[in-house]
Image 1 (cartoon, one colour):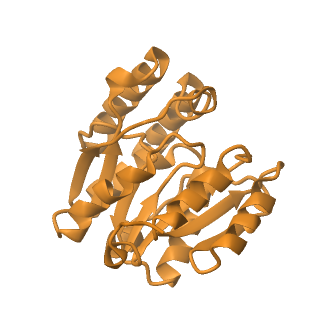
Image 2 (cartoon, helix red, strand yellow):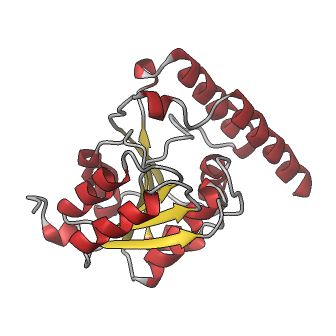
Length: 235
């Protein structure tokens, strides 16, 4: 069991969206549970063994791991929204989003939660050092940061980070519509629209062939841009 103070973990729920993550899902959710946190694994219509492995992990940590599943793949945004609803229904005090592909350090969870627990922020984004990223990834993320600022008026270090922490109030008032990767920029829009206090802390990112093949690339970026333009004309 973890040496992390249980008083600081029992009210924290980690939302882990997973689509075909059989290589890493068990290690991630069991590692989080071992530290004393609650985990909501959202299986987003996986075609591999992700769901079966998550259920096996739940048997090991029945009081900490919860598994919910989409029948079909609905996208990252939809998976995060499902997880947030479940966490709020379980009276979570703090909600953290955490990728299932192994790119995040479990040791960074207290770091993103601390500003919330200290009452200094409503939302915290774990900012990845861009200088450590592969060039293609850092360029795409810099472009998305610029677009997020242009469209939503909020300057952030890492708008596309998957490691974020929310108070229950922030998670409740944020309205997520985007089903795909556009959810990352939509979070920034909602933070700005709802006048939520935002902090960023530097986190560690683990780069593997699997993690480098996921996330924001040129095609995903164009789709997000198209949605931003459409949202602008709806205002």
